[in-house]
Length: 171
Length: 201
Image (cartoon, rainbow over all chains, first blue to last red; front, side, top):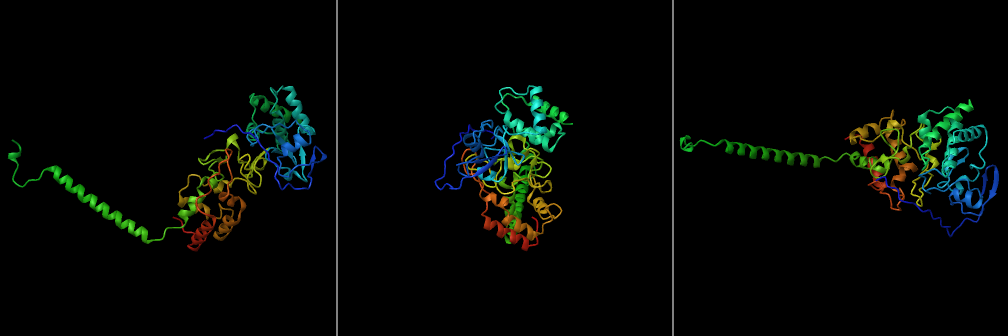
């Protein structure tokens, strides 16, 4: 009942492709992308904007590795389509900045959170999204926000500690 | 020789028990027939059919008893322990719209419809009998201050409600089972129920 099959993502360009070239704001830079508006935002970011810090994990919103910010809110780039992001502000791990981002990055380094690192882009983007709206999260708040971001190295204890550390450093 | 000592015409106790059982069975059967005929002579409350839609997994998964949405055809908890959040639209940094768009994603199997969210706690339907569900549904203090007419309009026109009739494909590429009654028939049943004053079964 809880089985999740291995998932291969295939994206087929529709025949009636919209001729308009979408322009996206990614990390405060405009990108004119020759892509179909229905393309998952993940592929536009990685393959067309060349920003490969955002990772492909499952393609089915199950792992969170592809998490980016859309108008400051964490979203799954494998599910959001290019047309959803037109006229909005996309932020990836390469472009995230500000005091919350700095606090999270500092805590991640001081507690040496990362093991293999594949999921960490999604972990950090989600942690920044959480602390931007809730500067003093409880363990329950952290669990509710971070449960959906899978870490196969099981660094969850360090991730939670680092979020508390970042919150403390934010004052 | 015990039998020779019994008086003429006496009846053995097991014969008496058997006669009593036959009489009891005949009485019960007659009662069941009468009850059945009486039930058939009265029109069924339309809410009994309405309830089969409202308690189908396509509806019930977002009307859970607790603070976590459900998934699948067996109402299992949403993977990744997704939480209700303060506004029924997910927890901070784990919002429903982070994954659920305004339409189904038949490539990944992630369902979607406009304003994808949980129903409020007051509209938790899981585990209710049809009668209890009926009482909750028409209670303005629990249903968002909706009248019976408002309820019909909501269940007729709301895009998220309509998703139950077009639930897309799952992660295996198989079509999800829609709710059991066609939408037009469902709305007709709702109107019939309202015409009866929202009577509960």
